[in-house]
Length: 225
Length: 284
Image (cartoon, rainbow over all chains, first blue to last red; front, side, top):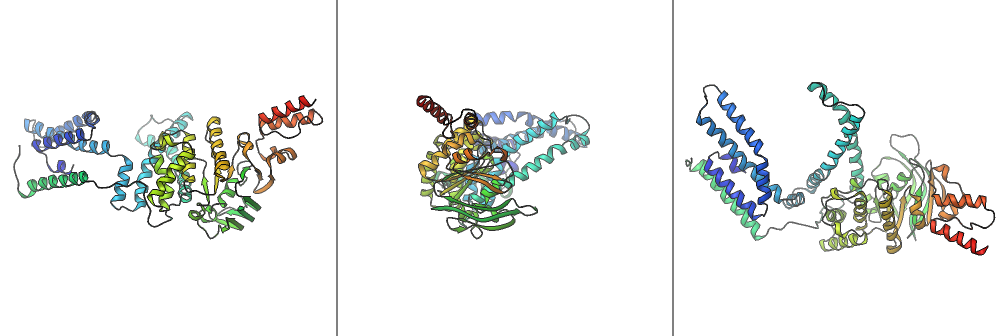
């Protein structure tokens, strides 16, 4: 991902995308991975157009093959970038992410906050929807008016949502209290991630590749098409 | 053996000027199944929160008298100690599950108590089995129905192996069928594992067959307490917002209209009423 941010050259990006495709195939998510990348195509087209229009609107820049090429480069780079995110989220469940944070010795308080954020997002989304529905059924119109009046109309939605969230947080606090949260300084864990040999290999490979990328970019500068 | 003992208990929430609990004297014995009834706001939930230290530790206010849980004074034992004796299950199952899988949720309290991993694994398996939800182990709480969530919430408390389980209206968000199923499971904890159950509920029709003691509360005081059959026979509890099961009301009417010994006892279930009527007919 970081490599993508450093390089713009088409060759490097192509290598990255190929590596990502291989990785996703190894992780057996190639089908879903290619679909997410494909699903991002409107965004990629948009980035291309935005880049292109920005470039030709700059003073001293005219419509040229050069500007088309540069905009294409930017859009292409985005593919590599999105694809790497996609692999991460397709192969890592939120629990594993939480366990990884624990493994990295992040204090449990923060890991817990992270996990509960994931846990309660769908619940809050549902709650928000039901508040919107009930306020609409009382005659609240959200789709009319200019931006300012529309924003004002969100107040009757935000206030009950905040009240509910506060009430819920109180109940949650009670519940973690009876589940002995923070009872002992050193918590134990039922499940823990262990570094296996293939994890070490993957980690060292990525470090080597990343250092190579830095090396060729800043120290031994090479020119690529 | 006495599990919970309350003496001259009174409580007033901070910022309020009225006592929510007044002069409560109560002894709850091991293995009892206690039902707290009364209309909303009568102090049921507050009383339950006195039994595991949430009052006075979590809620600020003025506490009078004393509560002892297995001899431990709730004033100087924090909830995480008392919860190992008296676990509590709340009304809204969503607000009691924090983890992303059922298994992790049940392990949560045990991890907090820093039990060794093997023991956690053993207890999680056990709790899943007792609640009959082994098939839900790897599910996310968001995928479960209300009844299943509440079972997971009970399992997560059960895993701490408390001697008492306190439940504050656990079925209020459930449909009647899942409520019945949940109540039957709770009753099993009582008669199979010998866990003392203290439950605040409005579904008397489902609970009465299992309950040893009915406590009716009104305005912060205990109005009646005792064997549910005796109470329903002697007193009219309807004015205190207690939903008397229909079968009991039918029996009371029959008793009034048909003189003599037609109905010798107040039946708590439809089966009992049918039995009584059969006996009466054959005796005639």
